[in-house]
Length: 273
Image: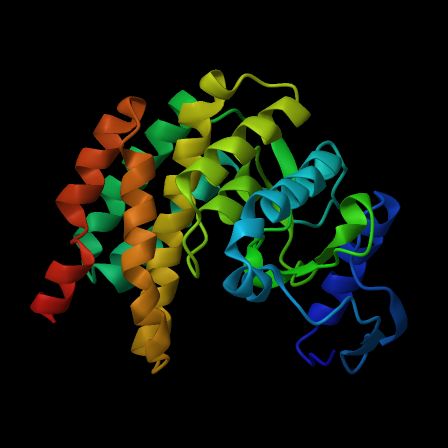
C-alpha cells in the first residue's frame, strides 16, 4: 500500500483499533509513514460484490456476517483526532448536492436547514465509530474462517465518529449494487438487536442518516463526473432511488418536500444538461 499523501498513518491508526476489537483488518508488517509506504497482509481476493455476482443466493449469509462486524464495532472507542459528524457537520456535508449535483447555490441554505431540522428531530446525538465506506467492494469474503474473521475490512482510513447506523446504511444503501429489500430489512433488525434497540424506534433515525449519506454521495458522484470520471454518472440513478426510499418515511415528509423542490431527479437533470 502506497500513499504519499499520508493516508497510511490514518489507515494504521484505525487498523490498530479494529485489531484490538477482535475484527479483521490487514496486519501491517512494515510501515514507513514518512514516504507513505506499508506492507500489509493479504486478506483474500474475493470481495462481497464479486462473490455475490456469482452466488447471489448467498446474500443473506454475507450481509448477516457484515452486520455482526457492526455489532462488534458498537461501543468501540475512536481516536480523539477523528472527525465528529455532529448534527451541524452532517448538514454541512450535503452542500455537495446543491453545488455539484443540482448546480444550484440557492438550494444550499434550504437543504442545510431541512437536514439540520430532521437530524435534530430524529437522529440521536450519540456518536459511534464508523468505517464510513462500509460496502460490498470493501469487504473481503473469507468463508473458511469463523465468526467476524469471515469479513476482511479494507478502505477504512476515513473512519470517523458518526450517528448510530451510519455503516449499516452504507451497507444496505450501496451505490454500486442493489441490495434486496428483504435482506436490508433482516440485517436492520439484526443490527438493532445487536445494539439493544427497537427497530421501529430506530426507523426514522436510520432513514434520516441514509438520506444525509446519499445526498452527499449524489454531490460526490456529480463532481467526479464533472472531472471526467463518467462511470460515476451511471451510479447516480441508484443513489437517487435509495434516497427516495428513505425519504418515504412518514416522519421525513418536510425533508422530502425540500429535496424534491431543489434537487432534480436524474432523468430531468440529464435533460436539462
